[in-house]
Image (cartoon, rainbow over all chains, first blue to last red; front, side, top):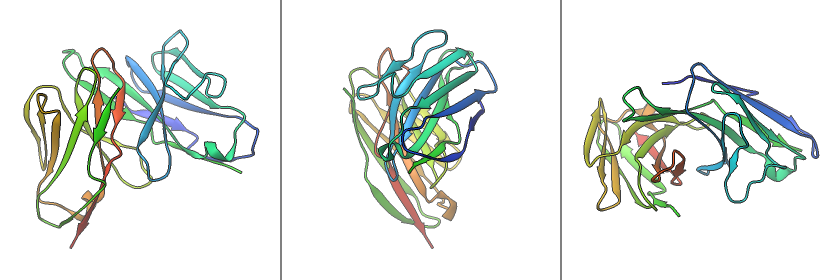
Length: 118
Length: 110
């Protein structure tokens, strides 16, 4: 399965600023996703990062607030814009897709970015 | 939409067997995943079921019944390091996205 390097691992940011999180995958993958995980909660999908086109956002998430790039099949970024304390959370990227037999999906996660907005 | 239910917390004894259930209601189905997540860490892939039946992988097994919208994760010979949250996630038909349940926090006690 793919190995993902995500950075930064954590950051403390001022209200009103923006932070860009990067994910680098060690192999070409079909799908990449961005999730948010509030403390003690499960994962909520923010968007699907589409290679070479605009990301597909879930209800409640918009491009102006969470712009996403995916220039190729191994790299994606998520920006948290104009941050407020409510954006304090863990942000995770996920990548994967079918194996060579196209019968099994495997998804792995980056190590996460713990964001605190003050 | 998708609705996934699993117990919030469970406690089991070291060396024992524990079964974590997951029920789901989805618009289409393209597979069910189980992940393990230790506190402060990213989820780790455990298993994937797309056909009915039991998939065994070492101490962990996962079962799926598509007609019942039901799955369970079975952990045998529990170890203290198995204390973690276990997340059930479903992929809907025609979609590669995963919808996660709220997770089951398992505590293994001596």
